[in-house]
Image 1 (spheres, rainbow, N blue to C red):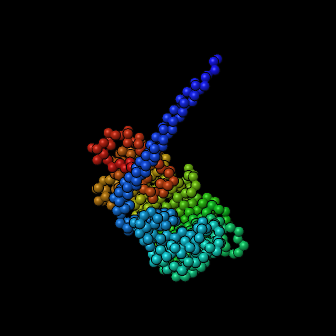
Image 2: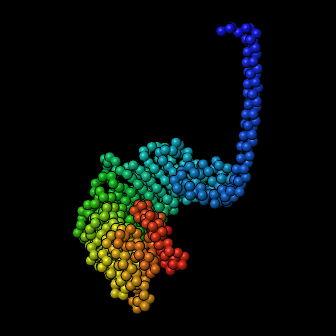
Image 3: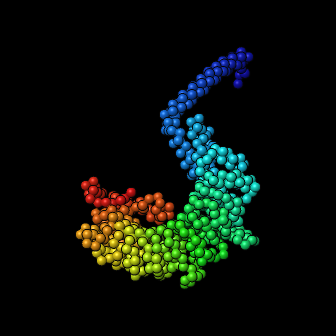
Length: 518
């Protein structure tokens, strides 16, 4: 190969240099363009900020009155967002002004997670001014900082509206509540949850024995909810609405006689809820002891969430003013009648002669004869709710007009009733729909019937019911007991029903039917 001459080498280097200069020129141009792009992006961001401010000036959050914003912030704080007032005050001047409303700071949360509970509590109290205080205390470990912060809250006891206390051990709850022995005139609601009794070395450490003394000077305390291993031995006498829930954590057997005696000391009690876990299925260790009997003269609502065996507690209670009775099983359905529940219910109805307007049996069966006798003892019953409670067709016949029982019955709610035929429901509704029967016997017509997941109630029966009265195939509302459990979700069934009977559910036919699908 011929070697390149010196002139050729210089020519190549010159050509390379020309290209390098071209690249440098292009790089400079790119840098200038990138700089211009960055400038344009900055201008674009400026315009976007201006647009956001313009839109914000006409948004609801900006145009809303301060009192409306304050109410929104208060709801945020009430939902459990402890720092909602503080965060809202850092958004803009308008939100800051609205967040300074005293009621926004009236929800005070005190837990072991607070970095400086004393300073935080002092800030919240200073901002709340004289607003009613809603206090939530969560205790994992009792430390001096938390107790000092609670002392600050105690100094404002005259402003307390609600108190929610959650502790790991009952002894911690007692230690927190003991200093509360002062006048608390505005306290209305008390909620205590203690998950375990802990290691007890002193007598009384395993029960909330200080409640009556701690709140003796709380005349407005009407709502109490307690979740614990044991029933409290005493409660303030002003309680109107009481919820007692035993936890699943093992403990010594709670005293039924002590609980009944405690209930007998509440002269204003109107609503009582007892929730008993399966662990305490054998709690009734005093069965047949007439000395346990108590009379609750003012009780209007009784809810028992418990294993079916616990329903025998009814034989120890007389409640002549009772209007609403709910018996709900915490165990899977037995698939056979529970004799103890039926007998206790009958004894209760015979001894109390209550004016019950609503009866609910949830996942607990009673015998056919018990159903018939119960109906005969409920002349003022207006609503019957059965959930996975098997009622035979002939027992339902006891409600037919003009010779049946429960003449005031207006609403029937049936779910997962496997033995009940659709035609039996249609016959019941039709027997009460004749106005001439109402004029002669004063049997009220069935105004609404709910049928969900009942195997023998076919679609034709549902449509027949919808022609005769309001027929619903959906749970009532968010307060429905089945709403959170999800046991009565039937969206697919309702969709199929809607698609299969589009013609019947058309505008002209729909006006003749009263079918609730949504």
